[in-house]
Amino acid sequence: MPIVVNLDVMLAKRKMSLTELSTRVGITLANMSILKSGKAKAIRFSTLEEICEILECQPGDILEYIDNEAYAKLMG
Amino acid sequence: MIKKVFGLGAAVIDAIYCLIWYWRMFFSHVDGRHSNYDIDTFWISYMIFGYVGNFFCILCIILLPIKIILLISKGKPFDKSNITNLYAISAYLFIYNLCNFISRYYLPVSLKVQSLQQSDASKYFYTHKNELILSLLLFLIAKAFKRGYNLQKEQELTI
Image (cartoon, rainbow over all chains, first blue to last red):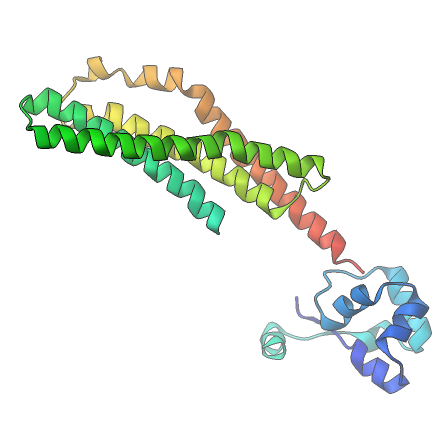
């Protein structure tokens, strides 16, 4: 699935840890790690809304579409 | 992967068992005069493959369904092992019946050991129709379980 989650970039910009984000959003660290690593199959609008509110960003800042070739290269 | 190989392996062993059975029939019908060595080889291989085949038959027909029922009762119906077990049972039933049919009806007729009237292939399908229908049903159930497993995985990975 060539949708990349740029959560780590936004976390670095806001100087926030994944643990803090997961606590504030109210989902487990394990699930947040799945989202960050790009293993997630889908994201609920409610979760996206919470993340955007806490990180003060737009959904497009977190999710990005890339073509299959670039995605394969990125994932190794 | 191991279970798939196991299911197919069981069917292949039973198929060899059927072919040995056919071998005996072929010799007794065509040759009529076989040496003691032939008879000994036949009985030894017949017994070995018979016991091994029955062992796999017990595993496929009794133990694997028990394992499936146990997993369902534990609240894990869409487990990967359930899918492979269902595929294994389905493949076992189908391949075993197919090989049995080939060895008992197709080969004797094609090698002219039996006439077409003597073999009566339709009788085989009539008597074994339940096993073939069960094999098809199990295959469809395995497909449904696979779909359920994929949906469950998707649900688990929805954050």
